[in-house]
Image (cartoon, rainbow, N blue to C red; front, top):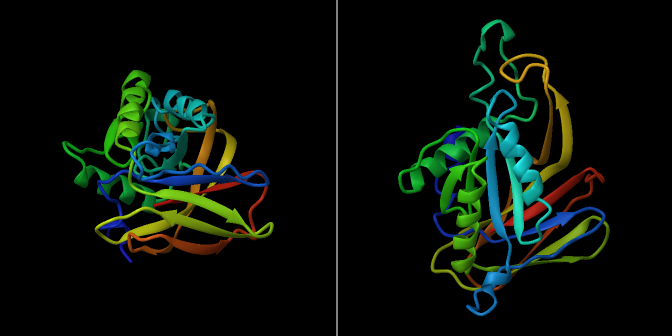
Length: 241
């Protein structure tokens, strides 16, 4: 299946709701539709980046700071369009975390958001706005704006065993929305041996490795069971609505 077709129609303009899990500790953070409590939920912040991008390391460092904020679900998506770019005598560098599906995800955002475009480093906040990933002031403003409009759904997770969990979704929606399980590596340091960042040691945070659709959500309270039987202590996951 074409990666763009895979994502088409699945990235909404409405605010994303999320809960983030970190094995073996689970932290449940919820969005709520109640106007008095919705602002307490976490905001999804997605960084589109590449190890071959000279201006990306500061953005990745900033995402690392955001990943420590309990009010933020920080995720790092590595795109693949830098992989074949040759940087003079330094050559090119294949980002070990890049996937064409993540490039497609960014392109869908670019097509859906007002004045949308795709570049690195780019941060998408709450699924509704974007900014240069290293522009801390702009990102902070977007996070504050997203919290003011944070009212899509409530997400909580119940743990039945070490590997069996249930995501509980509350709230209402006028249209069907997908529930996704996002897996990521918490922290990885890579020595880049060619390309624009040749010779640098880059540390990345919450690097997305896989996205799996759990189910459609009809807009009514529901529960979705899932397993994470092969998760390691170096990994985490997030449930996105």
